[in-house]
Image (cartoon, rainbow, N blue to C red):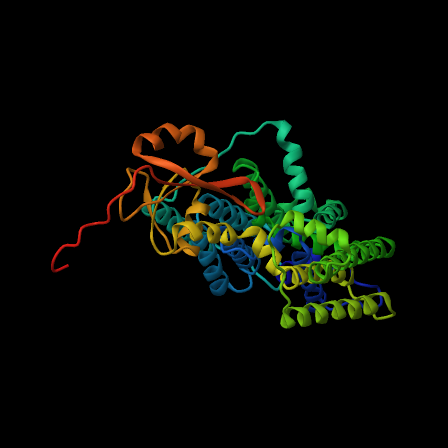
Length: 457
């Protein structure tokens, strides 16, 4: 954002008698606003805390965006960033996305009106980009990474994409749309203005990838840096009344969310208020709450910091261009911190397979062999991790692998085959926090003799 807003077309109009912000200071303030807009996006919260290729793709896409934004100022560093970003996208499973972002973005930078302090992209730069693209293509081909997962859609599905973008990119998307409207004079020739053309190209490509790959929120994750950049461009054009509306809305919204988190936590610990405590007991049966001094102290300090920030924001202070995004970004960080401190045991119990595997281990034991049929990857990984089990595809009962585990949804489909192999149902165990997920345990229909003791073994 700093590099893009240093472009003369992105700078504010100079005053007749001076006094306007210096270009570097203005660009730094806009960069602060872009970072706050990114932190405020709701879609960043959960997915940024998962170890998945989607998070890697977010980082690599941001690296490509950074490299293209600074290419005309720092060729070597920027080329290294673009190469690392495009190669990282390729290796993380998105070679097509890497090529579209990198090559399209480089064309925009090549045709943009240059800053007098900068230079245009030369043929050497274009050739370097072509070499980087060739490296990605060769790598994807050598590692057999070309896997297009195109999902056909109709116009009826547009509302699904719209609904996903509304909550996933909130609150950056209203500001991004406002920026495109206020900068519409340059938008008609956006390819000549990199501060508009480059982020808009990244948004178009990533949203298009989301549309063609099954409307996945993980695919949309890579659009957040570009949308945050467009949101930052809206800050100089916001009226005071609109900024006040954003402040009061986010103040009330995140304060209420933080209050709800605290009330539910108190109910879990004390049983009062009764209704939230009953809801927790209904949604997470058999959950035993625990008190952590460290988590409580961290949550209390974060809440006090939120109060101090609200006091600062609502008080009299020198205006800053990024002030309208302070509360959204801080409120999102506050609520996520409260969730991962006060509610962490509850969330872990609700989302983890550990309670289910613990019940299974009481019957099958731990560290042994389990045969399986119709298990999902998550269920299999949970048995391997929590029960330390060695999994074997379903076959006839064996003395060293005397239990069979199957997902309950496949019971009717596989019952005949299971019986023919000599298995009989022992019990069915439901996941405590999901009534629709049940694992069925089978034992041999006939008792099997222990393996004979071989002399000298």
